Length: 94
Image (tube, rainbow, N blue to C red; front, side):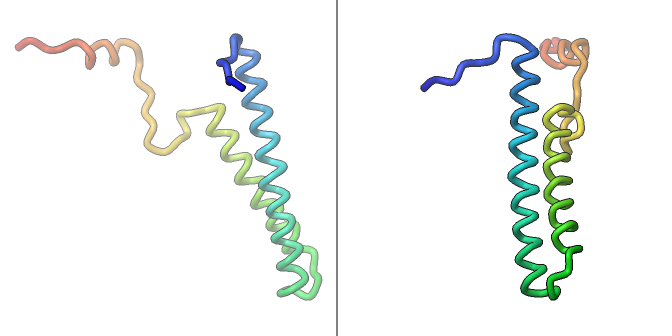
């Protein structure tokens, strides 16, 4: 099976949303499971560990999705304008 590049911007956005939804389900599910285990073992069947860990998972998924749609928020990433790129790419003859 070969993976081809999406042909339109709608396909790219759709794939990003699909990845975000899948990531949300996985991370919130793992957080929920960890919260249930922590609730049963450590906290005498209280509900707040479940809500807290599910929220942590959902928050991590949200942060990853935000970075996927806005690459400028990735630490260490710098956005270079086209004119700045042309200046750095052209060799200077001094």
